[in-house]
Image 1 (cartoon, rainbow, N blue to C red):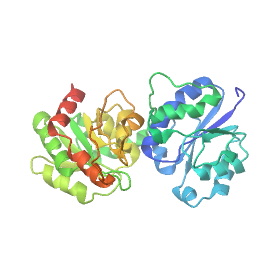
Image 2 (cartoon, one colour):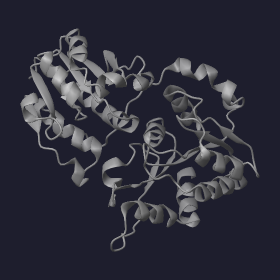
Image 3 (cartoon, rainbow, N blue to C red):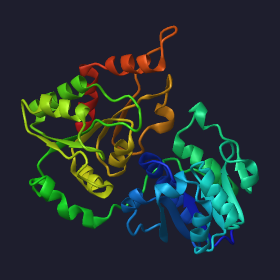
Image 4 (cartoon, one colour):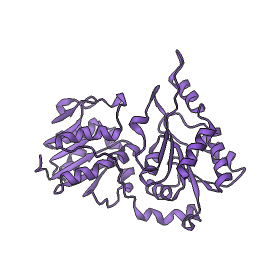
Length: 342
């Protein structure tokens, strides 16, 4: 397969998944130095890969194309890149059908949600076992191309530098090297959020200890959960609430300067780790199963906490997750924070 000229890397799901997949860019480029690499992602993530040095282009796709299964429209766009190979890191059936319609010779993906007949190289899918990191699972797809996983997975993003221009409108002191801690309280979909009381106590403790500014980030507008945090913490210090006010590239540049971020496993956790921000990530659960091994953010300055707690007999997943997050002590959070800050 060394004569491959144009490769499409498709990862059309969420921020964290795409950031993890970026750890594949360098090994692919080294294995196929003469090939052109194109990244197929949702358009809202495009700003994280501006003029990326390892990529030859971005194919951004609207969510409506995927949700409405508009594969013919996507196939027409894919043909413009004359691809020899597409790697489906996310098992998106619409993309798989589009690749088939575009007559891409080599189509590599995990079988399961994508029927094997849609792939030239179907790979058995064992992800739900959570026995490996998501980044290592990605390299199972690269095995047919002769590419092996490196010893250390390193994410590679390049946020749009123009996004820095408006940050001082949100944080007037941003260029003054003033120390601050970032907090992300949201969670994807219906995932359980971190308890407001726990995160508030952590922010108050950190402000008193280090005199850090407190900054809240998040893609959505401030909701009741965020407002409770802001109201609680602002009794002792000002809280800069940026919920819904930044794009992904702006958030990335803000996190690059943060002394620390506290969040549960989420897109911003992976984004912060990729930008070199010390990241305190409280890992959640998939149903009742721990996910640390599969979803730990990639980075040198990451403390990912997976609480050791067993579900009670007949306990629902929702109740167990509530008890799970509430079992984390202030002392443990403070200890892990000091390790990151040391």
